[in-house]
Length: 163
Ligand SMILES: [Zn+2]
Image 1: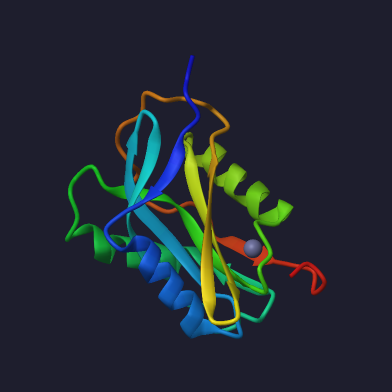
Image 2: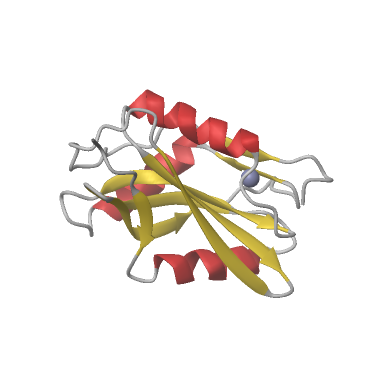
């Protein structure tokens, strides 16, 4: 019986996401999550912003090549067990993860064969509230190391009324 994992934000990763989300207002922004796996949790030890010059109030695209170079640059300073564990992006206007957000993450988890975290920063009135999700299609709890690459780029696009 495998336990459902949670996403745990550590070492200021949450504060980093909140600050980046507020700075990018009124547009969305996002990036990748670095960390490692425990049997009961995805531990996020670092968040990185991968800026999208075309981001709008309701869309953000994380481009694969940009994410990969940011990941490689950050890994040098991190422990060997640390790698890509998920994505984050902001939602100006307080919406939670959209069905597309979760489907995209789910597809990435299937591609990599491991559970992934998705953190949505809901931003309203100068505050950023973090909502962590875990997609775990395999429920494979034995994996204890993270991959050194990010999956294919992801995209957040919301209908203007979904805010
Ligand atoms: Zn989204």
